[in-house]
Length: 398
Image 1 (cartoon, rainbow, N blue to C red):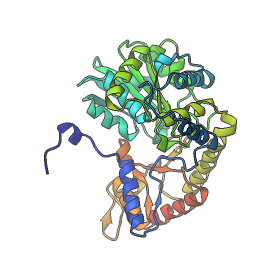
Image 2 (tube, one colour):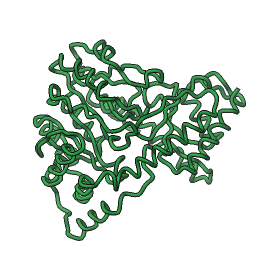
Image 3 (cartoon, rainbow, N blue to C red):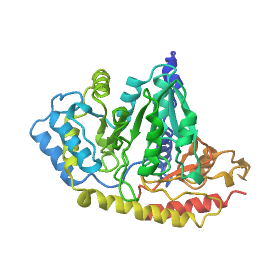
Image 4 (cartoon, rainbow, N blue to C red):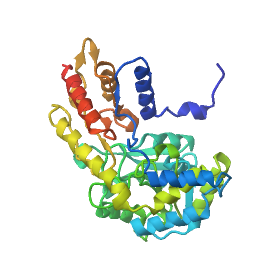
């Protein structure tokens, strides 16, 4: 086998994708695996969005568009930001990409030089660190735990900033914890950030619509730092369009232009058909099309939390958004079953996969190997079975 670049050898495979792959392999062997490893809504894309895509195909909307997305789409995105978030953007401040993941990669590669420091509150979404490795930046983690609802405060942020700090990268609602920052909590962080003119924020708001605490708060709402906020969004989670690959970035024009330039070399525009589907999504009424999905997720969250209360040893917050619970599993570390000892959450996840046929993602993927991420983006029937398997599996350990 030949030699791969140092760059590719530095980065790790996504553990969420790895767990999903292991689940599929076991399913192919005829084993009844329940996988709660991927963050993927199980609802179909709304019909009205599918119709817009079919119409685009029939009308031969199948040619290259502007790298950042066709103009009317970017104008529709601006209207969405004004309507939903009270944010003013112009079309030349919007870049549409092949998913929020590409939007984040674009921003990091355009802002971070080798050796620059990027502050990442932990736990964090798996790809933040790996994208940063590609940019040769240095991650500075701010550790949080279940007691503080996995949210950083202003003092922690202040303590983490050095002359080399370039970016703060975070999500709200958060993957993997489901934690949601309030307006007051974001304002306290913004008051710190404003003191450092070279510090930028990549604010990942892809779970905006899956929010159980009365409305999403955007980082860019604070005018005194808006010119340093890169807002990341997309259609995967809120509109159940994961496979369509549609991401959105709103940023100061000079950053948007840089991201257009890099995307022009990597992928060009996202699929023209996806763009037409996204255009329709931007215009949809929240109450009619999105709230029913959000309400279903809330019901599922409450079901999972209620069943987890019957499992001794799990410690969990009440997540206010996204579709994950993130219990601490320290009580099971050091226990064993049939000679297999559990040294961390990774061991525990492999144990549950093998003995309970339940696929979850260990906290190591998100920065701390004492937790498991459980996605409740599955039917209530599947979730009941999964929680029963979790309880029975953990009970085997002593």
